[in-house]
View 1 (tube, helix red, strand yellow):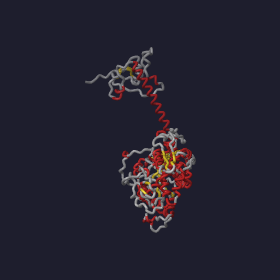
View 2: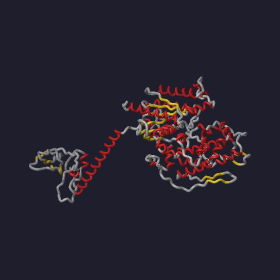
View 3: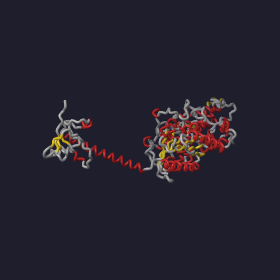
View 4: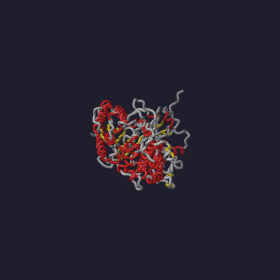
Length: 596
């Protein structure tokens, strides 16, 4: 059954283009002209006076309704489902209509304000220089976090200075961990019970106290019946035993970044390689690592860490002071440091305890018999990261404040992905924002790298070449140098990185020189090195050639090879290299933007 088309009366002048009120032209006057099948339209033009589109207030004396953009009623048949959905009810009262149209006018004004704000932000983004993004890659303990500190030290010193005092807790932890590791080795030098001493030697009481690497390295060495250690050394170990509690409390205060993880099972050098990577299978936290640890020490909550500027710290909570006492005859100290909460008070109490242990720590490290035991078991803590025993008297002082070099040498493990935003304070890029991503280098963390490969200007790859005779802490079957080569190969061959500038740091050259001077032969661990001199320059040249060959062979596109022999704990030498790298990254960035 066909419905009759309603007749709409309009004046000849408006031709049906004016808003309709209940099917009748709002400006109708004179002789109406019947028009059939007139299309129904909604007025969409903007008006500077939004109130002109609304009905008068119900309390107004005037009963005349002004035109409305939604004044169409259900009496008009329309094939448009959207128009049918927004039509007001046919029984709408004047009061309801007035309220609805007031809400429509307000919503329109808010929408226009949002549009204007978005437009202004887009214009500001066009004027602002885009940040330069740099990704740091490399295995665990390759020097990535130290490289970040060197960038910050050279070009964002005010932020570096704001954080420097908070590094005292980290340096104290590094010092205590070194002492604890030496104590573990000395403990293994003697049987668990020694009748000559008349009491049991203190043993580690938790997994935190034992360095897994050292345990495996020393497991094959049986306790010596002719140990150079005497009753004096055992008494020294007994006096230093409370340092384990200090270590545990500092680790709790600093968070997960203060401990070292050991990966069980086999994980490939590049877990993302081979097309098997699925981003949804992992979650990355940006509040792990030394950035989070420093914020905890400075009293900054996690949700506030990104908004704090200039090193402004929150006010710490106050807790009762712990007791540190000596008992005559037993030479035992009792520590009652808080175990949870109150990070800053815990750190301060730990610092006080470390001051009281200063002389014993110095005696332990300076003892020739202790050095002999460490040499026999192949342990060289002075070559590891975060070693401060050579400066124990300075660091264990009551008024100790970290220096720039101390901060650069300090060690905390990076977990997940850390993003560092630097506003360069000097140089040609003053005011330019740099984003540096530092990702965990352990094999179990490398799957987190892949999402950061996109939109990167440069990758700084760190390969420690002093570790040619060492195995990964995560997997004892894998040589560390071989792992770096496999990882470099995976990065060079990744197609998504084909146009990304790659910069290679052959790091820890200072340790390489010390190791070779000690008599370690490269050829014993790298058979292809046969026939070459066993000195640091020759070894570094050979390793550099290996990395260059991989880039040439596996890179999807031809690109330059930029490599530097570095020791990132040497801040003066590294500053020169960082300046050259900054200029190179900037130049390459301008080329990509078609400015050069």
